Length: 314
Length: 259
Image 1 (cartoon, helix red, strand yellow):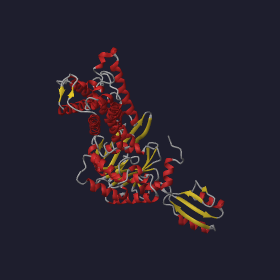
Image 2 (cartoon, chains in turn red, brown; image 1 turned 90 degrees about the horizontal axis):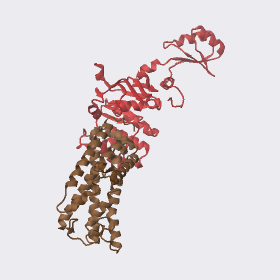
Image 3 (tube, one colour; image 1 turned 180 degrees about the vertical axis):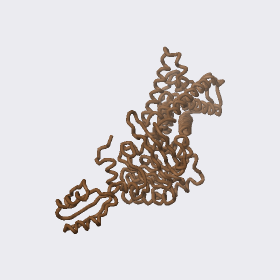
C-alpha cells in the first residue's frame, strides 16, 4: 500500500479488551506524516489505552498497528528510537535531580550516543525552560515542572514523531502557551505530532487533523477544515414581529426553527443566501437588527459527538 | 540503585549487626562456655576476625534476606509504581535486557551486603579484640592473610546463596505494581523455606529448598576447605535462577504495562 508510507501512525480495527469491556473498539486511525494530529476524547474514552498499544506497552486484542511504517509490536525496537513520547503524565525518580533522571533514561537506551548525552540533555532542558531547576531533585518539582521534564525526555533525541498524552495537564496558562509554542516550532521542523487532550480548546488552534474518540470508538476523524464543514451552518436573526417572521421562514422552506429570548436560530444549507432573505424581510417591513450565518464552533461539534455532562460514560 | 539513600541505609544497617554484636560481647565480661549462644560467638573474644563470621551467621536467617527482598521486590514493581517502567520500555529498553540488568543490579547489592557484614565485622573485631592466626573448626590454624581469604570466600558463598531468592523476588516483582507486596512475599517465602527445612518429616524436600545450604558456609572454615556444599549450593541456586528467571521473563515479556 503506497498510502502506508505517508502515514506516521496507522491502525486498523484496533481493539483492546479488558475482561468483558472493550476499552478500545475497532479503531482505525490514519495519522499523516508532518501533521499535528489532535486526539480528542473525554476522560476514560480509551485514548491512553490506544497510545499504550501504539507504543507497544500493551498488546492489542485485535487489529494491526503501524508506527512510522514498522508493524507493532514486531518491529518495536526499530520504531521507538524515532519516537518521543509522554504517556499518562510524566514519571521520574523523585530522589534524583531532573537532569540526572534524563541522563539515566538516556543511558538505559542503548540506541543513543553516550558522547553527546550531556549536551543533548542540556539542550532538551533548555528547550522546555528547566535549565535553572535541572539540579533540583524531582520530588521538589511542581506538577508543571514534571510535565516539562517529561517533554524534555521526549525531546532527548531528534525524533520523527512525538506522541504527547495530555501534554498541558497541570500547567498554568503561561506554561500551556509555551507548550503550544513548543509544539508549533517542532511541527515547523517537520516532526509529526500526535497530541491527545480532553479539551478541544487546548489543541484546536494547533492541529491540522483531528480524531474524536468516545467510549472506545472513533466518531470523527480527518482534516480539521473538513470537520468544520461537516457541522451544520445556522442562520441567526434578530427582528421584530417574531410570529410573522416564523411564518415567513416556514414559507421559505426553513423548519426546525428555535426561538431564543432575543433571536431566532435556524439550521440552513451551507450555500444559503442570507442577502436575498434580508431583501425579502426588508420588503415586508420587518425591522431587522441582525442577520448572519454562523458556523458552530468545533467545541459544539465535539460536545455533540461525545455528549455533554460530567458523568463518566462507562 | 546506589544513588538511592535507601540502599545506603540498608548497607549501614547491615554493617550495624557486627558492630552491635562486637560491643555486646565486649561489654559483657561474662565468659560464655564454649557451645553456649550461637556458634562462633565464644571465639569472638579470642579472635576479632570471628566477628564477621558470627555476624554473617546471625544475619542469614532474617536480616540479610530482608534487605535482599527489599531490593529484589523493588526491581520491576518499583519502576511500575513510579511509572518510570513505561518510559524505560519506550526509551526503548528491551524487556529481556531490563530484567537482566535489574537482576545483575540485585546481585551487586547482595555482594555489597555480604561483604559489608564481613568487612565491618573484621574492622570492629580488630578494634575491640585481639586478632591473630585463626583456629579453624577442624582445629588447624591458618595465618592472618589466609583467614582474610577465607572471609572473602564466605562472603562470596553467601552471595551465591542469595541468587535464588533474588530470582524469586524478581519474578514476584513482575507480578505486581506494589513493590511492598513483592518484598513481603519474598520475605515470607524465605521464612517458609526455612521452616520446611527444619521439619524432619520433610527431609526428602530439604535439599531442594533454596535456604538449605545457607548455613553450610562453615565448611569453608575447615582445613582443607570443603567445597562440596559450595558446589551443591551453587547448583541448587542456579536451578532456582533458571526456573524463576524463565518465569519472570515469560510473565514480563507479555505483560501489559498499564501503570
